[in-house]
Length: 323
Image 1 (cartoon, rainbow, N blue to C red):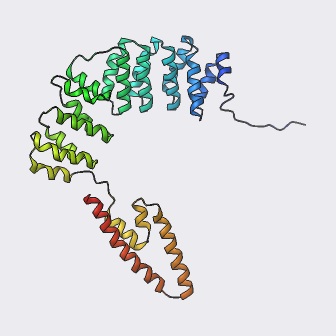
Image 2: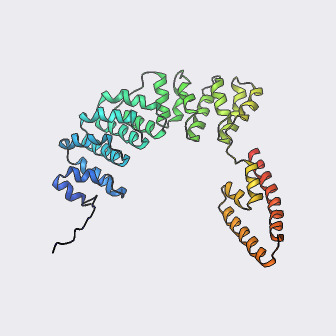
Image 3: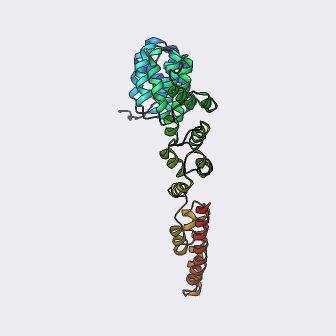
């Protein structure tokens, strides 16, 4: 009698990192870089790092792996091995990898390897849109003992390394790096960049002023309104700039109509978790009372209440817009 065939799938044949390292099983360790457990991923990367230069060619091939966790593990392993042969691959990752975390790790790894030829790539990383990649580049350059060669590099180095207090001491720094930071996704960085421009006591360029006045962060807009008139920007231009700000509040008309037609869904639209619960309670009450009374009175009562709620919702959102 033919025994039944049992199909099984074992993406991770073993999770014993020590055993894999002892066997020098590069493939097994690489497989664990995509394991769901972060701690095991880290240990696998560490294990690859102990295998030395003979594992570098296979590790470098992971630079094209679709899983960012695997590419991160690759960078960690190469940081431990510190083989200069990996520099070109890591430089490409710093500049082109789609994952911010991978670019960050690749930049730090270049600093660990310590090759001066990677300096140009790390300086270019100062213009990355992600703050952590810029910070990783600054750390790596510090590890390499690099010194800025011009005021612009000094300014970019201070920005990337979160050393904002050094900016006023830089002789005649250009404003372009700070103006670029005015478009950073992080509102704290945008605030520090604008404050640095003000501390340099230079006229604020109109494009930079327009950018900060329409910023989504109300604290930054208020800071700009207070500071710009003293730095060559006409107060008459302030209202027009602020009027173009990013509107973060929800549409009051949409919220009011939803609350009128479907009591509670307007609150749900505004992000209040209990809005859908209120909608369910209202719908259930209308259904039960209509069955009991066999009339449209419950529906009329519900719409009377929802009309009042709709008016309240509209003016509540308008009030939030004003503040």
